[in-house]
Length: 600
Image (tube, rainbow, N blue to C red; front, side):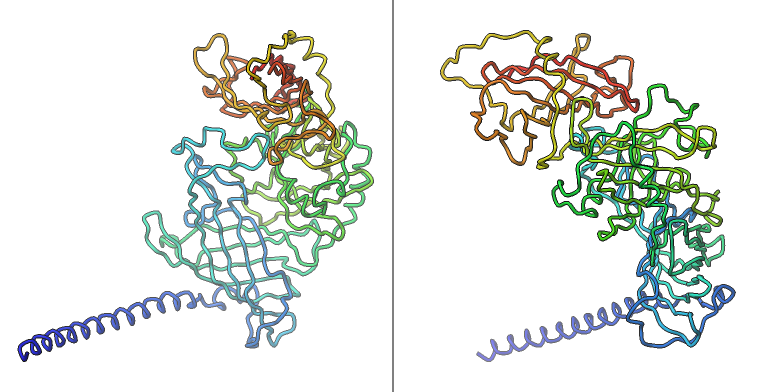
């Protein structure tokens, strides 16, 4: 018994000794970790000396310790920049895809706290400046990039991949002179080198024209410069900044004039009113619908003629796409501010970077009498390699957008519109009118929307009639109103031994009803849902070889070829006979196609 007790006592003593050692080790780890974390935290608060770098711009002063409850300036400012190599390089890898949710060379200046000082109109500022690189991944190493990974007629690309998101945030403090409109701040941040080494990066921010009253021609410009020597790994090149102000923004009368300029626009289809659209509020609709549009030029257009909106700026290509990026929207007045970006990039290679030479800033207003959105857009001027002398002017560009009330085989877009200038032919910067169309056609659930069949007779003449087969064993083909009308297809031609393209066919309308895959069958009231029915659909074909299915000598660069088709489907024979219409690139020109018979 004693022996057992002694053994137990020895074990207990050993355990106690071991516990003490672990306790000391844990205490050491705790204090070490706490010290390390405090070192990291304190290093961020050890900002560069304000007077050394900002006294010549905005003199500092003693400030109150209590924060102001209301900010005298906007809580956040979105802006764009150029420069910053190598730490803050805004340019993505040319072999990378960037998700187009934001510009790759954008930043966010967020106000965290504002304090009064003993000098009128002088405020102490604390903030955070974040340079957020866009999401990106290497398309060359991801085979999914070459496949059609997005829904037909959708402007939203849905590639699924793991994105590398990297950003650098500077903790900043400084002073803002309201009367001078100048802000100067110093700050620090952490950044990693390409080798993975951690750097402390210090810099000074200087902004001009930071006032609390703005208009469409107002710009905030400034610089962000490294405080390290040029041979220091933490050094980065000078950054030039541009910000579109938001505080107390006043819409210029040019919006009303522009709205009159949009009236009676030629060749525009009749539009739907906002009230006829689902969830018909101005800001909710424009934020969802107005995204990216394809540009269509006159057939004789080329860059040498008056088709290019930017020929006077030295841009030699004809833009193919225009995108709208919302800045702010007012529900009460049904007005909005947007960036209007023109690009020559297709979806697969689209990584947006703010380019002032092909980007405009605009004011938009809804005209209910014309059922359209009209935008007056102005050019960015005075820039070269920096934004130091940038300004906004030349507000001669107009854009109009409508929700077409009638769709057809020639046009089945959610949104149709135009781009033009109010300059005369002899003025520098004049260009011919450009049509624009969204690439979506899923406007379902709108009572006033109609589809107009125009090629049914052509389809019936071109396709031979088939006798109705006997219904052996009660065999029945799918109803024309069923959701199996969405087809997936493979394309071959007579000279090819393998598949040259693949894609799908999505119904637009069946009879006088618009198709909705989420709602299943669409059978008109009082109808049996059987027999012959008119049908229209959109067909998207992706080449598997890089060669167009319609021309063996034409390359498609793996882009989706769009076809609109209409015809008839008979569920007693299982035959679908259709005629298609293909939009030829960016020209306002169409090619009729005989699609023939599809048998279920």
